[in-house]
Image (cartoon, rainbow, N blue to C red; front, side, top):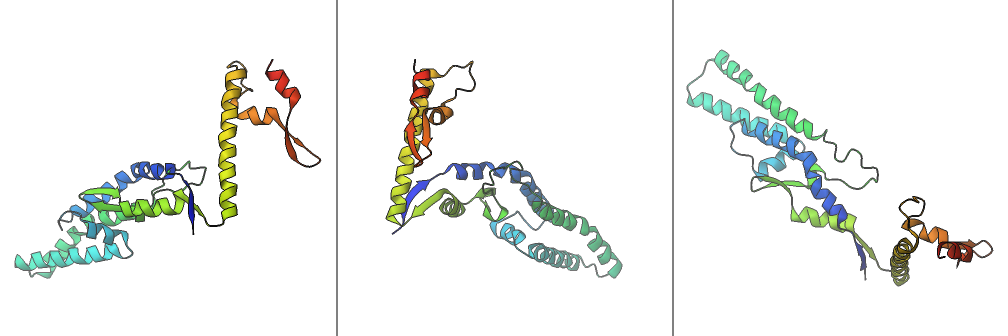
Length: 218
């Protein structure tokens, strides 16, 4: 049986903030689609636009609708119909460019940690808004935010590591309270373990460096 040993939802919070990179390009797609006068953007249409061949499907619907309007208007002259079709090319081109623009969105360009970022596939259009659906959030959290282990020895090791981290943080705080001097930038809490603990090179065991301890706890 798998055991959940860690859940870091910080990555999920980052995912939500990534929407800022997508907002303008997505709004552009919405406006370009609605400029075709085929109705408001819907969930179904947005999903089609995201899919392969989505633009071609919308273009086909648009041309069919335009031909229907020309038929209803009684326009049968080929030259006039061609002129109308040519005039329709601009809004179609605008939509195509807007869709292509989604491929060029760079999310968190200075993401040095290589953390997962929000992709177009994870964005839905529901209730007139672009959102990250609950199902997508759960999928992301399961893949990237949660760590499971099934081997009891592995679970025990992780628990020991967590205990060690908590202890090191406690030592760092105590060290800061005792010896930290804002004027001495080299003495930071993060250096507590390095200054106070050394390694016996014969058996690679840790021991408290008594000289360092005496020098800082005078």
